[in-house]
Image 1: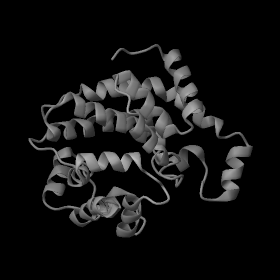
Image 2: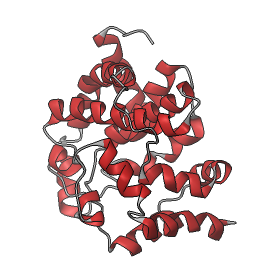
Image 3: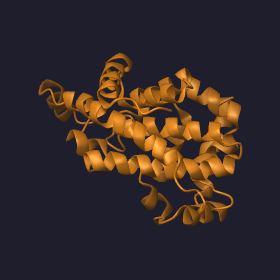
Length: 246
């Protein structure tokens, strides 16, 4: 993938944002097309991640969209799914550092200074023109995101665990590829059983270290945690929602 001129990428990001309507789909869309593999259904399905997951102010949708695109590209480049998992995690970490360098935070609420669940705060965001800041940020970070994606996919991989695992990859594996794809196509943020099951099991907690009771310094630590049954119950609860949709 060639590195495009910064101004060209900035303009493309802003135009895509206006056309697609959400920051999450914008970055999934942009990177997919730079990689040469459009994923229209999946790009549409990521709309609910905008506003920090259903406009709740968590991780910014731009980061979600970029991370999903890079992870998908990682899987295309690597026949071994376990190795691809490790590379995807490293690449996503690199993307996240690029985003934090630009914004100083990964949280939508910090970046927008808006509580989207509060009607008054949301109205102020819209009426004051503060929403324009998201378009400006999209333009500024787009070329950096593309470069970070390239760099992340080419990071030194010699220290990867022999068998990389993550909670996300385990959920997808247990769901089954075809079922997971169908879940993307029919995603409804108001009715999605997987999201509701997650909320119920975690008591609406979204932060990983609070859910599992620890932080991870390395990919090896996280792999060992999952391998030894970490978050086993939550993974099963999420995977079981696939059966409920049938």
